Amino acid sequence: MSSAPDLGRFSGPALAILTCLADGPKHGYAMMTESRTLGVELGLGTLYGALNRLERLGLIEALPAEDRRRPYRITPSGAAFHRAELERLDRLVRAGQHKWGVAS
Amino acid sequence: MTRRRLVTLALALYPPWWRRHYGAEATAILEETPPTARAFVDVLRGAVDAWRSQRPPRHPFARFGDEARRIVVLAQKEAHELDHGYVGTEHILLALLAAAETDAARALTELGVSPETVRARLRDIVGQGVPLRCAPCSRKSCPPDLPKWSMRLTPRAKRGFALSCRAADRLGATDVDATHLLMGLLDEGGGVGAVILAALVDPAQLRGRLEPPGQP
Image (cartoon, rainbow over the protein chains, first blue to last red):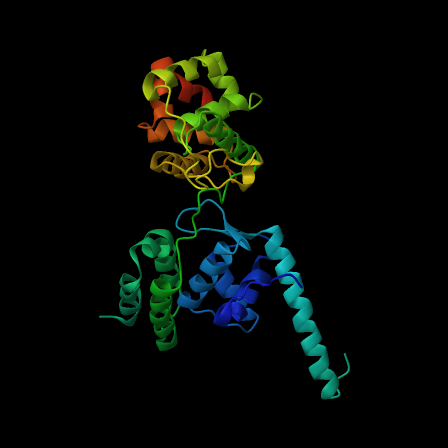
């Protein structure tokens, strides 16, 4: 895999954010709400820490603010990164399930 | 003091750029989420992280579309040909005219602005400058492939780019294009490019051609 950006302790939240954005632009509050339904609790500090890193890495980009809300959209390199991360996690999930005898 | 108010007050601990950039939205989010102890701790940890590891994400070309990016490259070329070691608003103006098929170039041409008239004014204002060394690479001649040539923008050019993003916002556009770049130059107002324009055309008339009728 090409040099994947290292997001440190923000890699989990970043993955949740990219998942939220995979089907269209969303603003921060919508991302918090959706990721909670996915089992990832994003606090405000964590959300913006991850958004800041993702935007600086060019994986997401800000759209013009509407009212007080700024929607973000995933960039082509963000989509490629997201797919690669999902594949990596999928291998991990399959290996784990295999070892516990869970059919997949 | 209510807990919600305490959590919202914690935003004051963030760096000033952070509050300008994210503050309004963060406040709106805190108003809509339960003010738990966990949320409060996350806001505090975020403040430490913002000071230590976050940076303003706005870099000059983040929102530039293909057209605007091409004009930036053309502006570099203009600066290079004039032996200027920087890219200023005057080079952006020349680049806007060089990309002749854009709405901005059409508006300028219709009002009688041409590369020749701009160059003539530029000679009056800046003079026939001493051939400068390219500041970033400090060699006499820069490599011909421009994108590799790192460029130094004047503060006014940077400000003009930032204002062109605002112009794009105002017109409801996602990407910055040539029209927004020209409006950024006009809004900045003090750069050599804007001064030359003001000498050649009525800025209000030019604005009128750039903004579709019915817009504020």
